[in-house]
Length: 261
Length: 274
Image 1 (cartoon, helix red, strand yellow):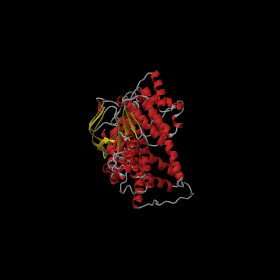
Image 2 (cartoon, chains in turn yellow, purple):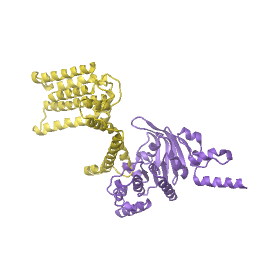
Image 3 (cartoon, rainbow over the protein chains, first blue to last red):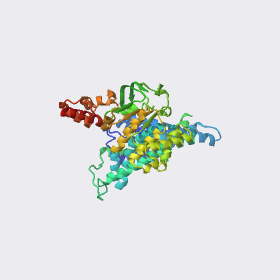
Image 4 (cartoon, rainbow over the protein chains, first blue to last red):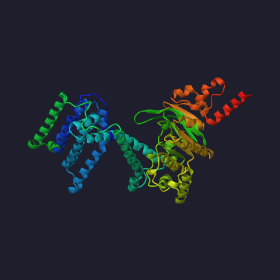
């Protein structure tokens, strides 16, 4: 569950938290595209380092580290799979550039996790909903999205209670072979799904009794406006993207293996 | 026999839920654990079947230290009925639901069949044997959850908020049921907010506040002490309130249930007549 901890929003007043979520999202997409362009260690490392100031400015280092730790398992998995396919696909030999390729692939994943983690750690669900609405996403969808985000911790807590309840009836989750272990989760999943459905019906009734959807046109108490910082972030994103595209087409990027030899 | 010795427990979120709790519960006792939300009641009882292990101190159940054993082993002796039945119901029929724990504990098919019939009758659910538990009413679902635990015939039974969502009649049935279990020598531990329910049963009451036990004694002693109850944010039972207000008449003040109240009042009236 630690990977989810790393995505949980906590209210902090910082430069990054106050940025417009739409622009932050554009930035995340920008980093995303840049990371997909390269499969060399050096530019990916640059992308990784560029984002560190954001983490420190937002003062979310601890949670951010936790999300990276949560992703470590998956990262190791990606690395090993890459090594293995190279090894078995390449005639049972491994070259240093094979290893570098696998490392780059892993680093790309880490960069993606890093940027998404910064985004979710510094953007409140309310802001996110507001951003969706102001981007002309229909209110129904924007609301469904924020509601879903908000209910994740509630469901996690409920899952824990259900696990306790079934353990108290002698259920042993870690017992048996793989198939049996998967089947062990049925007594957890069914109550969880049933109660999620029940909860959603209750939520729908509560919303309707508070006149949800009564007016076609809703007004908002707050509206998002771009400030200096947002324009700066647009500039940063554009710079990252332009230089990434430039480097991709016009610069031959040395690999570590090349540099060493 | 449950022995709790100086336990502390902190949740991963660093909330210290128990701060030095010691308690002994003898076989065959009926104990109500009371206190306001967040006092540590649920955290304490989850130590009895090993769902939680103390950070400091020891919990011993029937001579076995809970730290060393699994929930599945402890659950064999300590039945635990959770507050919300929807957190455990998952089977297609009530029958399968009740058989679940029995199967987990490795009972024989024949025994399982017998136990299911027995527990369904005990909680007057026999007509729902083949019904889906999800089609039952809230109160009935709660009884199915109780039946599913009772079917294992545990020596000790922990009930988390058993009266929530039950009407008065069901509460009365539950009370009689607990008395019946007690007469069979079972230990019953109930976590509850329901002052009236506890007053009517008059069990041993353990009062908790901020992760500590602040009072421990028989119901009619604890539930008639306004200062102590106020500290734990609990109101006096209604009958105790009446007797507090009538204290000028020289009646005894530690009366909490209807039968006792009737007896004392009749006696006083007779005295008055003479």
